[in-house]
Length: 328
Image (tube, one colour):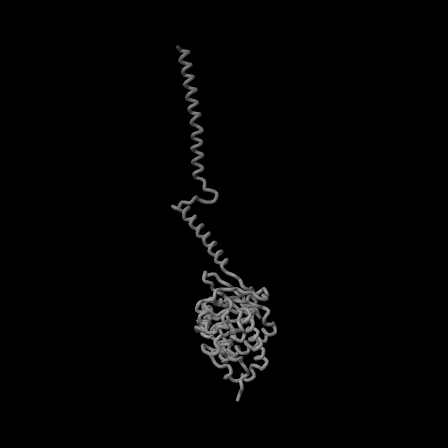
């Protein structure tokens, strides 16, 4: 019995030792887990704000939508003519507005084969553009428009001065301001543009006439003072001027070199845009109806010069080319 009891005690001792050994790893594991809980994550604490993951995903979705919006918006901008390229002739046809065609019914020979826009850099020479720019600068220098827009109309003599207009031909010391050669250059360029408009839109050149207002413009980044300075509002030429049927612009300075901003923008029915960047000597021409809603971007720096030449199919609105005023 004594030997048997000793044997039993030995077995129990081994069992107790094994149970102790089993407990040791468990305690070490528990300690290890406790240590891990006390160590800060490598990149900072995990989110603790309720629904923070949902918020973060929302921000990511909004950012993605913003990228898509601005990308699609830029895709809606069509460049008809960049300043850096020389365009021999480039057109963009659009459907004529019903109001425009209805107005032209009284002038069958003046109805366009198609409405739209056309651009050419080969119509006016560099010398002619420089001469016209000089004429415009000389005349506009006598005015002092308070806002960022000024005009000079050689036909009527209208010149921006302060918040109003004065007759440049009534000012002192202007008898010799413009020469016969100045007006001859003006007439030659006007004739070129008139024939180009007629050719592009498929009408007879003698079926349309120069009309008022036809003028030089100077745009700067000065804040607007009067409503006449706010050239950036979208508008339709035919709505603004009853006589207009065809509009043309001769640019006399370079976008991106002599001024920033000031691009010519056509607005399409689908909210897309068609852009013309001014280039000295570039002529743009377009039908004056609602099919050509447009505006000019605000000038952000520099000075933008241009000459607007407008045409009518109604002879009662016709004007003559300007000439040297006869003084008594």
